[in-house]
Amino acid sequence: MKGGLILAAPASGCGKTTITLALLYQLRKMGHKVASAKIGPDYIDPTFHRAASGGPCLNLDSWAMRPETLGALASSLEAQADLILCEGMMGLFDGAGVDGDAGSTADVAARLGWPVVLIVDVGAQGASAAATVLGFAKYRPDIHLAGVIFNRVGGIRHAAMLSTAMAAMGLDIDVLGHVPTYPDIALPERHLGLVPAEEHQALDKLFARAGQLIGGNVDLGRLPNMARPGRHPPARSTPLVLKPLGQRIAVARDNAFAFAYPATLDGWRAAGAEIVPFSPLADEPPDPTADAIFLPGGYPELHAGTLAAASRTLEGLRRAASRRAVLYGECGGYMLLGAGLTDGKGERHAMAGLLPVETSFAAPRLHLGYRSVSLMRDGPLGRAGEVFRGHEFHFASTTSEDEGDALFQVDNSDGISLGPTGLMDGSVMGSFIHLVDRA
Image (cartoon, rainbow, N blue to C red; front, side):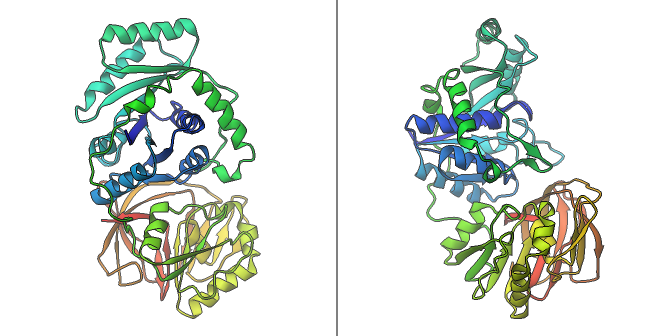
C-alpha cells in the first residue's frame, strides 16, 4: 500500500532527524522505493533526506501553504514512491501563532491523514516515557499515533522497563524499537542549523553507520505497513506556488545560495519556464539571454570576500538590470543585490549595488518566524495587494537603507503588523522574506 508516515517527537532534540535519515537509508537499501518530506520551513534537513533516500524531499507546510498546495505536494510524493517518511518539526503539537499549533506537525498529520510514529528520547526517563506517549496519543483525537521508537535507550534492562510500562498503559501503539545512544553519529551544525549535506565529505559512511544502528534496533518489517494514503485527491499537475519571474530564469545555485524550495522551481518548470543555474562562487555570470534572475538565500556571509571578487557575476547582474531583466533576491540573494555586506569579523565587502541597502553580521541578531506579506506595488511577483505567505530566518541586520520603494507590507503569524520590508527599484527587488506560497 502506497502511503506516508510522519516521524514526530515530543520536543526538538529527540533525534528525529538522525533516525529519519537512518530509516530512509536502510529502507532504501532493503529495496523499498522511498521518498521523504519535511514539515515546516527548512532548507537544510531536506538536503540530507535527498542524500539518504536518493529521491525527492518536499517541504509540507500547513501554515504557509494553501490546502490545495499541501495536498498536491503530498500526492506527488505518493505517486513517486511506495513509502513516504515525513519528518516533523519541533514537538508534535508545536506551531505558530497564539493558538499554538497552527502549522504544527500534528496539523499536517490531521490534514493529510498520515499516521504518526513518535520518537521519544528516554535518555533520562524510565516508565515515565509511557505516560508521555499516553498524553501525546490522547491530546488530539484527529491524529493517529500508530507507533513509538524509544531513542537513547541505556541497555536491555532499560528497554524491558519501557516495554513493561507501555504494556501496562494498555495502549494500542506498537513499540517499534529501542535505539541505543550513538555518540559516533553526529551531524555538525552552524548558525542556521545543520551544515548542508552538500558540504559533507563522508555522508555515505555516516548513513551506513546510522542505518546499521537502526537496522539492528528497529522493526523495519512492521514500519512500512503502518503507512497510509493521504486524504487528498491525486495531483493532476504540479502546483504553481509562485508565478514564474520570466520564461528563461537564471537561478543562483551553490553553497552560498542553496535555499530554494523545489516546489517553487518545479512549479516554474511545469508552467513552461526554463531554469538555468549559475554559480556566483565560481564567478559565473547569469545567462545573458535570461529574462529573469532568482537569487535565493543561503550563506553569503561565509563567502563575502569571494562574492565581492566575483566580477563576472556582479557585472552580469548589473547588465541584466540595465536591460530591465527581472532580478529577485531572497535573504542572502537580497544581500548580494545590496551595496555592501559586512561579515562576522567586521569587514565590509562590496556587493552588486543594485539596491540601496547595507547588511551586516558584525552583531548577529536572530530574526525568525512565519510572515504574511502583501505586495506594495505592481511588479513581476504580482499585483499590488496580492498576499503571500513565507518565513524569515537570518542573523543579519540592516545597517543602512536609503529611501526607496518598499516591496512588502509584513505581518507576523499572529497578524501583528511588522511594517514595510524589502526594496524594489525598477525590475530589481528583494527582501529577507522567503516566499512559500500564495495566500
